[in-house]
Amino acid sequence: MKNGTLKAIDATMRLTNAATTQDRHRRKTLGNLLGCYHGALGAQIKKCLDCGRRSSIAHSCRNRSCPRCQAGASFQWLESQRESLLDTKYFHNVFTLPYDLNPVIRQNREKCLSLLFRSAAETLQAFSINNLKARLGITAVLHTWGQTLCEHYHLHAIVTGGGISLDERRWIEASGKRLFAVKALSHVFRAKYLAGLQALYAKGELEFHGQAQRLAKAKAFAQLLGQSARKKWVVYSKMPFGGPDQVLKYLSLYTHRAGIADGRILSVQEKTLKMRFAYKAYADGSKAKKIRLGLDEFLRRFCLHVLPPRFVKIRHYGILSNSQRKALVQRSIVLIQRIRDSAKEPQAVREPEPPAEQANQTIQQRLPRCPWCGSDKLTKIGTLRNGFSEEPAVLYQAIASG
Image 1 (cartoon, helix red, strand yellow):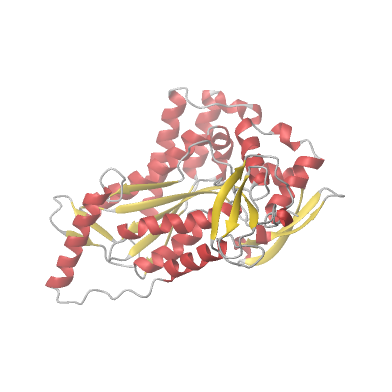
Image 2: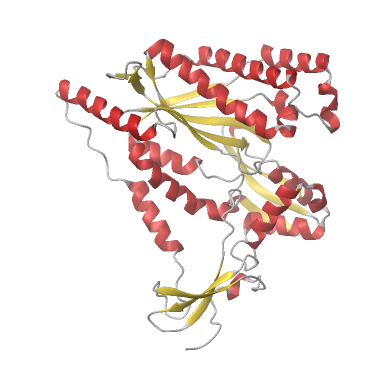
């Protein structure tokens, strides 16, 4: 049996006509998820070096919407980012778009979500130059969902608690419990995003279909922008992280998360075409609650969070921008250490790195093991391209002796 999310998607695709309502990219994504570790994507034939018997291991889909595949991808990404962590405090800001803009974003996801990245990064960079006279390092992670799989477009920005001075001669550390004033950040972010949205509309780069077709008219679109401008935009600022290791712990929870995890699916009832899943009601004191949805509605909500092809959902800016990262990170390390030495303060002793240990343990747990003797000493001897059984129970059964 398929577990959790995949079981609900599978039942929806088989028992309803929901598949016909999805575009080609989303149908391909759903097909990948259903075939993940179930043989439809092929399998590897491996031989155990200890007992000599053979077994077959189905391929994963590696799709970024897959709850299974993203767990391993998260740890691999974190290890690649470890060398860019600096010995400074980090701040966490969350930039959220108002729900009024959802109809526009839904039909222009790539342009509107790229604008979200750009507006948040430019806001932080402008404040860092004006207030700190320095260039910060920013890692921004996009999330598009709320706890009930509704559309909730927001950006998690992990920001260095200081930056390189504009002349690149010293490191300037931020003071206080907040990196910048939240109210001021909100005003500037709102102005930048709405100005960018207006520019896209003026260039004719936005599309309007169905119920949103009325927004194609200049007056209706102007009213929408005016309504959004009058609302309070949310830029949430959390307390600074204690250090680089805490940043890694946090990022491991956020970078490669899918819209819903398997563990939240409580039941899938094919006879009634209903399913239930658990969620946390943040507006009601973070109480644990349950919601019941029709299978077709669940699939509709799930597909809202399948990102456009090749859309980058983790982006870096400032001293962490990909084009200059290596040189600027090394320069930052030297400048930060210079501050520590001049103040005659011992360099902060890093705690043991549980994320790395956790990653190693998880990778070890995910290593395929021989179904006969339990050994992980397996060697690949062949590949099955398709036609492999869909039943996960046979993934580790012997296909031949000797």
